[in-house]
Image 1 (cartoon, rainbow, N blue to C red):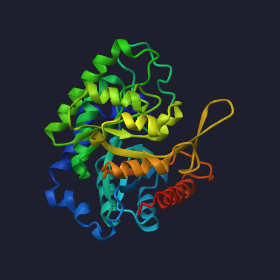
Image 2 (image 1 turned 45 degrees about the vertical axis):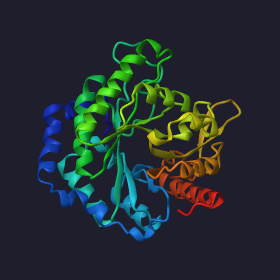
Image 3 (image 1 turned 90 degrees about the horizontal axis):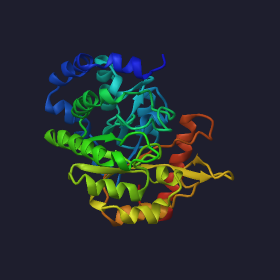
Image 4 (image 1 turned 30 degrees about the vertical axis):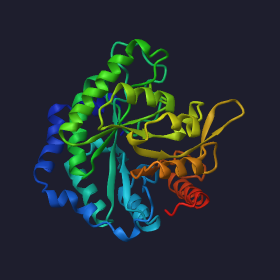
Length: 336
């Protein structure tokens, strides 16, 4: 089934969201929520980061993805985005319970809910040229569904025992200036809602959205000063739009407000356009970036978001990109 705006929103109205989430969350005790964290092997804590992989960068088969992350890669963390051809925000009660059981079996903790929150058109603005043209990972929620989606994500964060929810700041406009203040106000309100549940709201810099570069990220962090509003720093996305993420963009960021980092690489083609690459095989200075993150005390999730599919399949490509990342760690002298 193809998940369009109509099918997903129809299936996740207010009543639908409550039906999916509330019965599950109400029946989950604190010990059950904390179990994946409590069972982590603390002997493997030599890496300064919470090294993770976004699950659907490997396969939509969630059990297989977890087996590879925990068994083959030897990791303790995973980022949840889509599985079984559904966005994590569209899973029904049984699927949620199955997913949590699989995580427990593989002793994996969840870095964050990689939601599609605010990845939509800004109401009242001219339609973005990038609207609905990008891979949304089996999710498409219009502007009217965002408040319900946020509430759902809060429930999911508790259900999967994570304190972080990823968001965006609407499809990129040719001229965002007339709408920037209102967008920032919406982000502040969302951060305030998350703060009530002691959750972190992570804004990802995304080239198809209004915050794409380090410069734009720094500006939004100034405009949204909530301490639980942090950046999901993605150097690959910044490079894809033509900026230099490290050192130029990174040096502008308040280091204590980087709460998550996505790891992928980019190459520039002869026509000036970009393409994805395995980590270490592109233009992002990942050795310098990782050393800077370590130096600046970043200790949250560093999550592999392969995107590159040059090895033939998503699974093979993620293996190759993880190997590239390990080589970058070795060059940087970082034990991960």
